[in-house]
Length: 544
Image 1 (tube, one colour):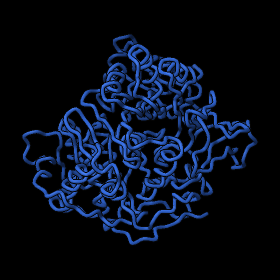
Image 2 (cartoon, helix red, strand yellow):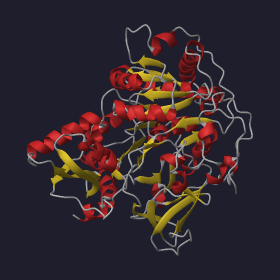
Image 3 (spheres, helix red, strand yellow):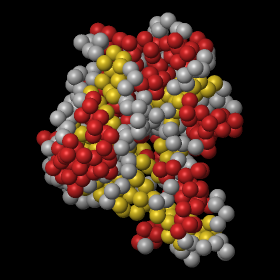
Image 4 (cartoon, one colour):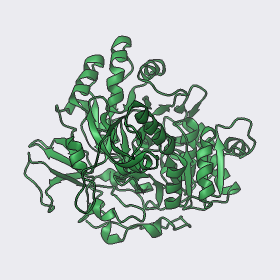
């Protein structure tokens, strides 16, 4: 089935994103095989999930919770409408404009995201840890005209703004006493805003992700795709309920976090709890008990660290634990099950297709497997020529469904989509019963504790240090984090590769790019393995 273009009347006046989509011949197939995937041609996802909640049994039940406030679905709509009024009435933004969002997981960040999308604008959520250079790369690519930023994170954004004046408006939130803040402006609004009548295929968000080159890619996701994904994994595998309370550590800037900690709970009529302190393994266990959380999302590393606290304290309210973001070792699954009695719900997905497409509910788990293809998707294991392999043979995963990869203005589109199929870049084996067993990444992406790190980006930061002549960065297997970022450095004459130099280089990287990307191990070598043309041979570094 060919890609289906928009059939509705687009409300997006600013066509910047639409005009930079790949040519139609490079689009993935979009399949809507299930009845619940047949959606109207005019659709605003926030109207669907929030406004229409007024007629649902959960209209006056909590949606957004924190230690400071709790908002029902009805109250959330009022707050979202006030922010949307600020965006449209005060900033004069028009449908299709991009709005950069910068903040940690919080009620305020969730409200801002919902308001942006309800107004027909395109949300560009960014990680709180990003530095000015990384933010500048995103601004250069997405050309946002406005930003909503948590006050404590303004400095790096202002530094990026100085280099990219297209970002005309920056409003702070979590800024008490600031009469120009987003909250202060919103408080002066009536809280009545009609959702922008977006076409279902209008773009709702750009979810930036770094490839192995370190250059940011921007998959686009439409209103239709978000609602379609609500009707796949959440409906058929997660099976959340209106009485559920959801917690988790993935950032809302990741589609894993956006789906798990906002969109999917809204679809189910459930609520989400955002803490006001950073999660630690012990703190998360204690908060699960205190809040009565029933569903939790985090990475395998965190579950492993939480297990002793969960065993000691008990988690009587917890029903479902979701692991994604990196491969789940079976040892971690068994450790968690022994500590809590809960069978982990594993899954693999991707930013390019918004969320999870292979998974298994706890009662259908098979040891070592991630699960089966989620209803709504079709997946195959193919060889290098695109031919389907027999069961039991290792090959490349390819899939089609109601969502698919479309990069914003990026030549890498043809690497991800081939003959209408999405190629996430993972090697799998499928058994006779349809279970998929993850083997490895097909590229050099480093996935450490749930975060994606591109080796060349870390290399670039290291090379800016005056002592470094050459360097190569790889992912080293690690039982706790899945992978460690490891650097091999050739120092310039006069510099010594000792413990002090290791600390100096690590601090240097932390100051230049997001701190989680720093190399936890650094080896000093006399030379790096290269081809005759000078290309770094990463596979030889991995052999070391």
